[in-house]
Length: 493
Image (cartoon, rainbow, N blue to C red; front, side, top):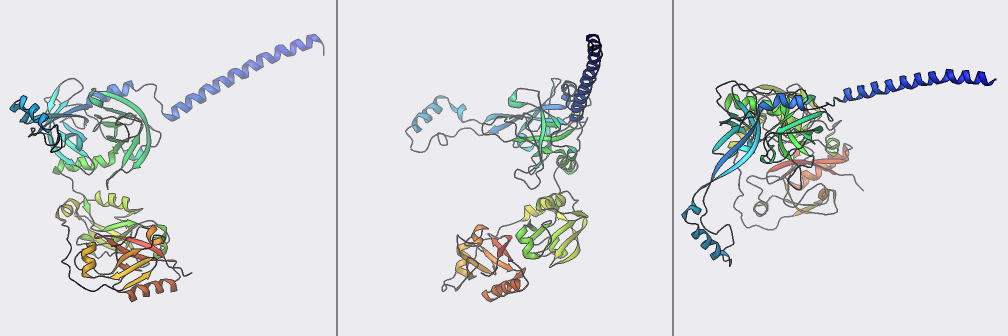
């Protein structure tokens, strides 16, 4: 090949290389643009913040605190500083003993043009006066409509001369881990403030039966309580309630009560000034793998009934040992899910409850009561008076030392009136029973889903389970009146 030919070849390749490089660059830019678009990452939160800020409010509460009556509570009785603090109070005159005002700060948001405002219950709890400061700079006094301590939600009402700007609730179930969110409120009393982050997790439970928290890394601090958590459409998907922090400041672990829980609570507070949750009237526990094996169940879905006190379930015929599989047409995954399903159902509604009872499926109609009424009427029972009697005989089995119920044991372990079954007096610390939480004072009332009152009945049920090929036996154990099922291995060595 001549030098001229080589030169022509190079001149031809160079434009081609430039063409492909340009094409590849355009492709990469488009790909990056599509990836950003797919993530939904906004260039700025400014437009969203400007739109929804007028609906977010700062809340100031005032509470009357009793005056000081003396040095007690400041220093211990007999302390050498007791006289010093008494003299200090006397020098400050009688005003030191007068009631004083205490203030607290929080956040909230307007949900209707006529002035309904949502916040946390702990923001306004015990307040004598509630003042609402709006983004535009004016303030209005608020009245308390109702509260729900269970979900830490409160509903307030202000009277304004003109319609107020408000925000709407979104569907928290559509929020996905990784979605962008924005929190607004009054952190540390600094006034209206915005922070942004993502949904870190969903369906978090902290302490309550109805907990359904969205976890976020958007900065939430003291004073943000009661403020809204927005999605990128400007809908409220959560109410900022709590943070996890060793210092008291935000470390990126905040919790907002999911809007789908809040909407139901707010709706009832608007209508009735209180909550009205459905009540089934059962005590339940999750179905673990060993419990499922002991009962011959195919899986661990459902909620196992441990006790049926007086109430709707008892009237309908539900029994201890039933496993609730469906409630009002919806599958029951576990106890937490059932509690929510029942609580979200209308009081007085007749619902179909599908249960597994001794291997057979049955459908039972139950008319729900009201949980709040049941909780207010519950009264604890006390122990009975003891009588002198001889030491009872014991049975050592499955790592347990068992005794028949006696008046002496009833008093010692507060078993309550009319207790029946076998009392655990000793638990071998190397046994499976100890590992699964059985302790002295527990009362075993059932074995193999049948009541037991004697040693012979207990041993008979164990023998029946072995003959049926079971590896474990299901025990109903009561402690301080609270029942739970425990499966213990019965395989012979």
